[in-house]
Length: 439
Image (tube, rainbow, N blue to C red; front, side):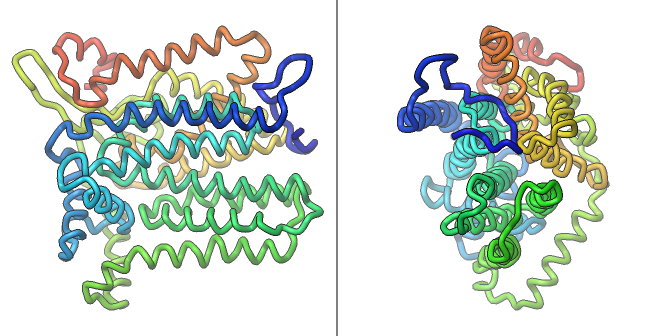
């Protein structure tokens, strides 16, 4: 299906230069196999060795312990500074796999695998280009920060999954409206409610997702302001219900275990206030905190685990992005921003708005910040890089693209030991530390 005239984008990467193009069924089948292959790869690198290390690391001492308390029916005292959904999900993993390292982390590994599929879906809906979708998903699968967050009992992989799941469902609705503006919305509005449910899950994981979710109304406002979409009154009512009532309902549902312990509504309100006051007053420094402006250039990653396994043998977990991808995405995203401003191309405009809104909020936050706070912004950069690579591929051929993929995957393979606590010699580990600030 061709793109509407008002939303230009690259031609489908899978289409031949001449001759008969593959039919819709063949194209969908090829896209499905491609997606399954990338998701399987993501699962195969995330799920093994979750039992290492066998003890709790970094913030697992809060979130995994809170999940244990939930399962025991006790009052949660270990982590009370964020809403409960991530702890409930971790508790589900413990229920399935046991109260051990695999149980603490398996839910994160599943979420990290699903995130790869969600990014594929979102990029495919945005650009209608199988290459951009696959390229984006592969880079998400091999990013070091996303990989590490997929293997630790912390909330950030869950909030990123829910956030981009909301974007994907919203864009699925929006594409239907843009393609068939004269038709009744019919079943398309169900995607709005799915987007609203995912938004509610994101907020019930961390409040910091409220700001990135404003990308959705900003997108609608731009489309309406540019005269590219006219929403029926019925759709407007559905949008209001989906993104106000549904998230509120989801948020409250996650507190059912809290109320079952006998807490009152007054206590619940006081708890919300205490969460806000905690983060508003958190100024205590941390050795691995970093400035928000430094995240895209990877000045200060985070050691979640580090110890000497044997003489001259080190074992550690370093939360660090893939510099091949991150550094290349910066000039690429400048091209995305230029195209968004010059042509008002909607896919690029959405990427620019989403990145700016989710990232720049941290310029106004005074509490200690860490590299993992960049997670909700990172997929926008990756999809922007994929869109630029699609144009490079169309103009100069695939050699440059495949070379880039080889470098990105090669970095992931080389750093896999330091991303997943595989023992390595001091000499080898120090070779991976390109800068003193990485140590």
